[in-house]
Length: 141
Length: 141
Length: 141
Length: 141
Image (cartoon, rainbow over all chains, first blue to last red; front, side):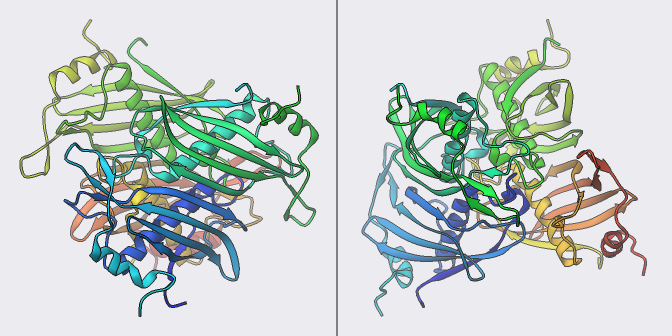
């Protein structure tokens, strides 16, 4: 699928736990890393110095199918399931060789700092939406 | 609610990120910690030395409602929504004062090491089920 | 020793690695937590909202004597070896029961944000020094 | 220097803290990762399935010179300062472009599982020593 981004990674020692496998909380860090790598490939960064915009998560969920172990290489496949006015819904598949490790979703929301210092939901800037568009499930060609 | 377990915690510095709030992956660690604290209160441990039983996660999900910041004190409220033959379904609410920080679920499965070294789904031992029973949504009185 | 601060902690599951013990990098997090707990007891916080002062580390070092395992309770004993004009030198001992787990040191430096945005070494504010003084090796009585 | 191993890495979001820079504890994880990458390049792995040998740390120390920030690329330069009968002493330099981020040392010890289950210091196996030899400060040519 042309509109899918693939992030490669190797399991690090400190990411394992006493059960000998990657602790499930680190799988969520892999999603985070994959999202940021997709943004970089799109010519963007989650963090814009001096910007008043942020991208907190509304939700994150994973189903775990197979364990990951130390030094294994795997990929995180990312797709944007829906690019809405204010939110981005990602779909993830973690894959090691032919095994699916986990599948999941994550939703981020665009927030803008208000004059009183609080963050409030805001429209995704047009240039960001445009650069993310190619990673959506049904990109305009 | 008598059958709810409450785990108290304070946000640590290393759990925050450059956005100034707790990184969402650490919220999943809070669930993990709360589960293990519930087990300890029930007279159990997730890790039984010499045991061939383990408790990997099948799934974990959180919805984030409000940010958590450095040094804030909060609670993780845990309940067992369903105690099945082989799985345990937890429900979580993260609370700081009167604010809900996040709500979520996690499902763990009982696995037993087979003679060939692999882990396979197994029945939750009777003594474990009995000790977890008081934390279920509808405990037998 | 009256001038020693003791921070209590329990090992969490995600802090262990596949060797079945706490990953050494997490021991440094325990130092961090203990320092912040000492500051809280002293009526201070490492993070002052709106302040232009920060406390980065200049160095950190640990010698590991014994492993720590899941669910074990331990203490971090902290003392301020030297409170200088701009730096704070901490001494740590991690203890589980009668076993020494690790001993170490950490040096933090007071920095102040300059008009151009950079951080530069600065004198420790008098009120901070006064509140930390009781934890020094040789407090003025 | 021919005998130096260089490990490339990019700073991930979850590794930063509210001060906007990489938390110092994560710098120790970078050392860990670099050591394991060196072992892989040498045709080794810190973890040998079925082996009764382990490589715990005796000590770790870092001096911090400059902060690291989100998405920055950096390198960890590793050298084996001394390869002794039972211990390996590493020297590290973390570098971003022309800036030194941190310098440090780490000592690991070879331990072997005894019949009673305890781990005891043991000689580094000859094949491991041979494969690490090229990374020492003064390799035999």
